[in-house]
Length: 228
Ligand SMILES: O=C[C@H](O)COP(=O)(O)O
Image (cartoon, rainbow, N blue to C red; front, side):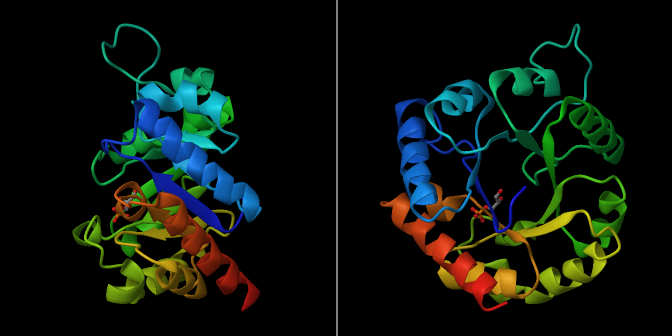
């Protein structure tokens, strides 16, 4: 994964799929290319294949099930998302929690398949236990701020700084911050506090002009990196 890490989670918003899903992905791609800054899209499973073909951005799944291929009705496996074109997946999002053993199994399989992984957690005490499992990144998000428009950077900066301290014990793992990220300053602050990037959903998916929001986020991230 390249820093700054910018992950836009499409979740199940009404513009996350179908023609609207392609449209928003293309708008984000245009800005990403303009600023030479990679933006990862975490999309509904049904859109992985389409968006992998329609845009040049890294496409992630939002979840995978910890099951082997076989009799598991409705399962979405690591093999399936890889074949559909995904570069990786979120795991354990607060809207799709899984058990620790399932995170472990999923990561083992993803590594074998060459898929990237971003494990979501809700508190800094989990940074080290999850970091020891060696995902590519950990995304820390206080659940109460998700979708609130009040950013973790402003409302709970200590969550980021404590998580940044903890991630130093597993230096190959990136720490990403998310929840309520709404503007360029939120992104700037999150990175200045030591995170490798941000995860965001509502500010982009609910925006009238999502490309403008993404542009502001990228500018905030680049400004933070320039200022060291
Ligand atoms: O995966 C993204 C997060 O849950 C953040 O959501 P939000 O930007 O709507 O707060």
